[in-house]
Amino acid sequence: MPELPEVETVVRTLSPFILGQNLQEIKVYWPRIVQGRLGKAWQNQKVRSFKRRAKFMLLEFDEGYVSIHLRMTGQLIPRETLPSGKPPHVHAMFVFSGQVVLFQDVRKFGRLRWISRADFASWDKSLGQEPLEKTFTADWLYSSGQKRRRILKSALLDQTWIAGLGNIYVDEALFVAQLHPARRAVDLTRQETIRLHKAIQKVLRKATAANGTSFMDFKFLGGQKGGYTEELLVFRKTGLPCPRCGSPIQRLVLAGRSTHLCTVCQK
DNA sequence: CTATAAACCTGCTGGC
DNA sequence: TGCCAGCAGGTTTATA
Image 1: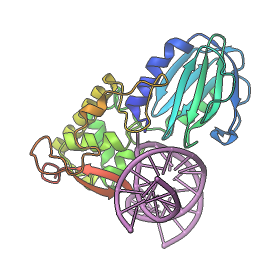
Image 2: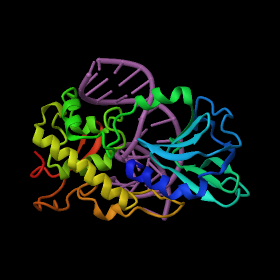
Image 3: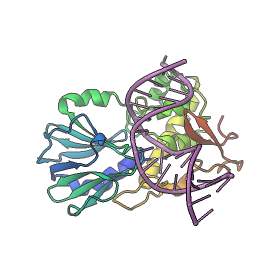
Image 4: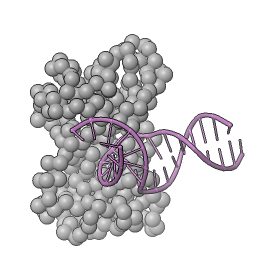
């Protein structure tokens, strides 16, 4: 559920609550959400920054980072004080000096991890380009695409190539670029690659500005929904008319993922 | 390398 | 109305 625009929205809206605070404690109620060991290098340390990288959120401390991944159904919910009990589906609580943030996740797929400064570079290197950064250019997309023989649907979901796209925005970007998801990255012409590059940035920028897409679960600040749900063009629109040509949107399964497209417009 | 499936979890939906 | 198989936006791991 949370892809780049949703994670960005969480970071933006949650930042004022936690920046500059001291993280006193991380209460963990479902240990499997923790990868490796959280240690205590962050304990009673000031939050230096709170940023997004790919679909991860990073709380930066002097000695490293606490990374948070929401996977499918995770949410971070700010509270002024510690709840008296453990609310349903809350598997961790971040206790800051003047704020509490609940990690709630119905499906328990979300993950927390400590990344020391020493490990950060290799962790960062394992992730692909940030699609809204200046380094993400059409030229880069074209040349790196020459090495990708997989179909676009699968390639664009690969976080080691482009970091932050998920099922929703891959379908939306491919529709805007008028490219069929079963095309292979390596087979795209320069013109097509330029279209894809523009489409990815356009879709992600608009979705981020609208606070993301709320399908079933995504909410930020504990209850607010993303506005991009109203702007979706093809995702979960099976049978509805294509916004460009009016023929019905099709659904198929590619790379094991539900895929929505207009077979007339996307070649 | 690429592709596919299964696993991790729970809740919701649709069909019977 | 009630039950149950199937499905869900993510990622990793195993297997072919």
